[in-house]
Image (tube, rainbow, N blue to C red; front, side, top):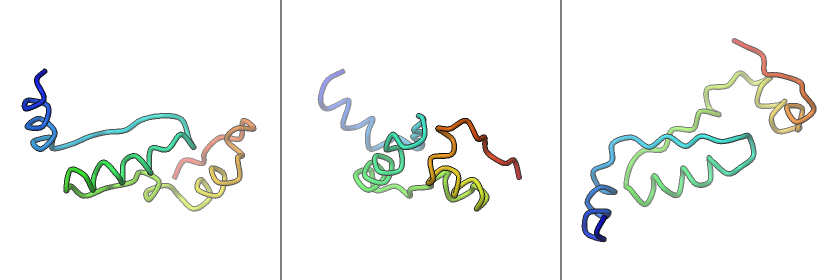
Length: 70
């Protein structure tokens, strides 16, 4: 793809989904990408129940303690 085509595609993108394991930087990359694209950033972490956020931040998932389904 030529440089011009990649710039056009980048500007026309409507939705970008970042996926990966917890703690790999999806939120950081997503926020920067959204800013660069002049698009809103929606972080899936904002939709987790509080107990799941606590497990993720404490490293409980790495110890095999799963998420709680709402």
